[in-house]
Length: 462
Image 1 (cartoon, one colour):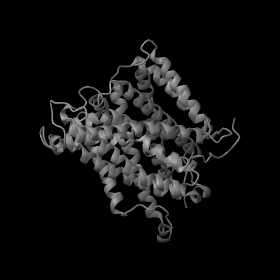
Image 2 (cartoon, one colour):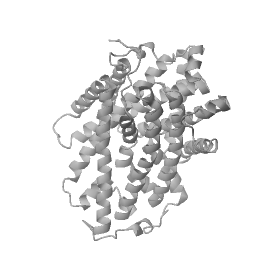
Image 3 (cartoon, helix red, strand yellow):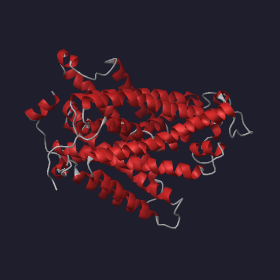
Image 4 (cartoon, one colour):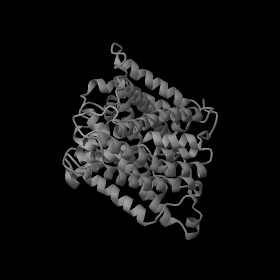
């Protein structure tokens, strides 16, 4: 099955831009936003703006390294070379595990969504079907994967635009306006004020807000399969943060202008409330199409990202050597099969363990996301410290406001770790995260041989 030794470069700027955009627009916006609003009130807009700025710095740090050295293992290999092999091992496997548990939640959610239309069909059939379908897509040429992800993201983005336009129509023309409450900017300051739960509420909301942006780092992994990474990666990174801030901030702004913040999410998804207000009787069905699309898109990009990460780590001696096997189309088929098999096991486990497992899943994903971003920032900082002034001048996509901006972003990630540990509702994330790192410490000591950097490895990142 192996007939090539290099990953195929089939992802265009259009593919990568929408992959990064779509990967960060999903459950965190369609459903999680209600929880964030409940925690912070209208001031959640500030949390999304601050969080978005921090994520943009993470993306620029990753972009600087990815354009300089576009590697399949991306931030795992960067951490390994600039912070040490142990850091790379921790970062890579934490990212893979994050993708796996999020995938597990998404495939299960897909089965639940399909039951709305086909209540008599067993849920496991839908779960099995979507795993096989996405697995097959990921075994095709990377261009096929990119096209599918592009169109899935178009549907998600279209739904958000429809909600913004529909919400604006309600505000300006009174379409479907409910009589029991006012509509307008005043809703942001009534019902307890702009910051009804104080600064503590805004701080607490960061746990949900930062998780919502999770997944955007997949853009760094696409660099090794981009047709022209020096052009496509900067374009994608510079375009995505502004769009995400617009989608999140503008969407929630419109939503909270139409409904009092303390009524949002009480009757299902905020999106359903908007469509219901417009008199669209098929609101539930429309939303179901959107969330199914979001789930498929997330599973698709997560399997891609985790698979490429394991492929890169295998070349570093931090994953089984068999993970480097490629199809004739330049796709790491072994890593895709491993992901699919693990998802099969996970689906079975979902039937055997309580529903509370999703709290653990969300907690690990939150910790893992912040950990990966933290290591990206540290790796970029370490890379800069090892570079000569001449090498810095030659960077084609340097981080802005160096070194102040990266230092502030690093401090912000440490702050988020503190937030997870301070609030009782999110403390489990810190416990599970520390437990996971201890497990990786043992695995590294037992599994990974003492690596010795070769001249070739040094040249790759020189």
